[in-house]
Amino acid sequence: DKSCIQKTYEFLKAYMLGFSLEDSIALLRLDDLFVESFLIKDVKTLHGDHMSRCIARLSGEKGKTKHAIENATKTRIIIADTKIHLMGSYTNIRSARDALCSLIMGTPPSKVYSQLRFISKRLNEQF
Image (tube, rainbow, N blue to C red; front, side):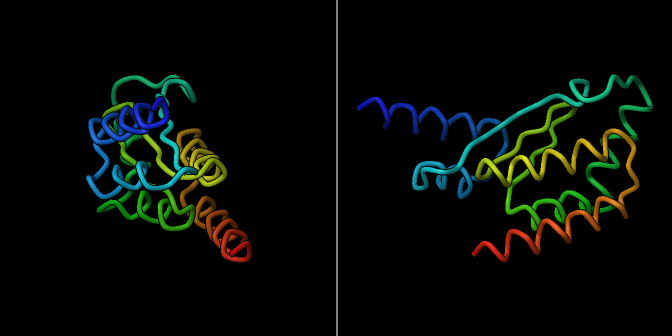
């Protein structure tokens, strides 16, 4: 069956990108989960120390910013050097990508947090 081969490919790809085994298995069980990847330089061209600072802004102190985005948008995020991998539903990935792109472009984290609160409320109202 072609769909089984596709799901197996997505599972292996997600696991190799760095997602946990449990998250990768979720790709096999749920039909509306996707993995999307992009480069930081696709959003803004940065070099040297500027790139390092950008990665640090995305992660936050002890992963605080990354976890806040994950929890608000119900996604999983892997930051691997200059690549960012997202796992979740289509609309949730879009929300997480918008928050990450805002941070890359230089938006203060406090403003991104307030946008995340709004997004989180909107997502919780849907369910």
